[in-house]
Image (cartoon, rainbow, N blue to C red):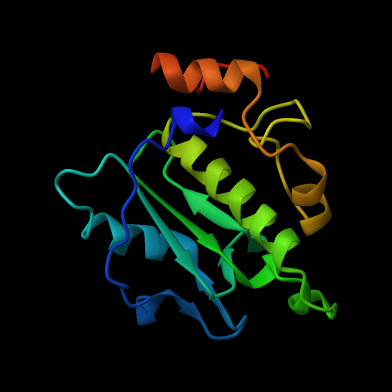
Length: 160
């Protein structure tokens, strides 16, 4: 269950997206640079920091990403842009949007706990290259991924 990750959460004041993260030619933001800036703002008493942005995110080797996280680290970021139906020319669907946001938030937080992509399509840690992939995967961790997070073991050594 996701509750093995999130026991206490709190909101923070909004942080500006670093201007140097803009990839002007792509009209997107380089998520790794955002993570670097987020690291400077992690509260001393925080276990993890999840950023949520309206900006469309990318990394140099991919056209876009739904989010990015430090594997086994502290920070993660999720973009709302491509999770919205409107981005794809469709009418808004708030329940679907919130489901996608939950999945991608758990997915990126899972990476901060050391989880890699899971082979199980039912697991929220399954790889998502498209929004259809996000919709098709499960909404929680599989038994194996949940156990890895709960145990604090090296989740990077896994098979799914």
